[in-house]
Image 1 (cartoon, rainbow, N blue to C red):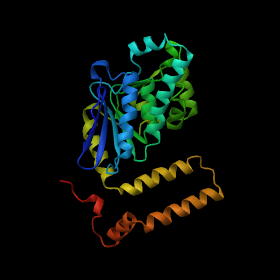
Image 2 (tube, one colour; image 1 turned 120 degrees about the vertical axis):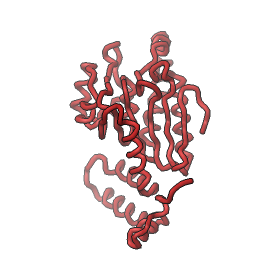
Image 3 (cartoon, helix red, strand yellow; image 1 turned 45 degrees about the horizontal axis):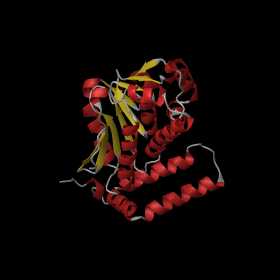
Image 4 (tube, rainbow, N blue to C red; image 1 turned 90 degrees about the vertical axis):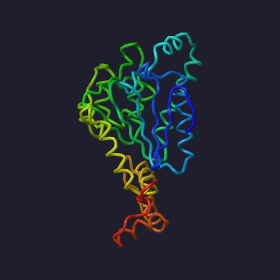
Length: 266
């Protein structure tokens, strides 16, 4: 798709895209350039109406080692306003990923440190290898996981986030699974094959229905019942039932045939 220096955006003919962190020689540590390119790549994804979902992956041995050392050294020389501008860019990335209309799946191998935990947390789902290694490492260098913290709390809970943000302990893929940060973990040798299984499963689903469900779940996330929320849920199911894709899904089910979105791609 679009050409970048630090990331790659690849579109699969089956109707999804993979956004690769592509600084393997730097363990996919991110800097200002990568953050900007990730924002631009997500903008491109958001305008491509042919995409059903997005995978977020890292080239090489590690998903991402967190912030690039040279970038951190440069940031240490900046004044408050310049640092505020950089933090705004990072927040733009996190909020753009979190609010993407289509489903997102992170696939994690190796290290996912610092802000990389934020990227994983911003995705709707994440899987990884059993031996993946996570760390909210900011306090070790006198910083705080500030911008990413709301997303990490949503992904693995306030109590666990307090522990790992305050201790900077490293924890494994298995532990990340226990905390809910990862939906599933697999032996490292099986991660690619298992990822393909997730892809195939997502391709079975109505693209519209996945987007509508994602949007709906944002409304019900708090779990607080209200008259307004009841109306939203009633209107959502009514709209999707009468939509062309909803009608196709219902008719295909009743007629015991394959819906149009499951037809093989060339």
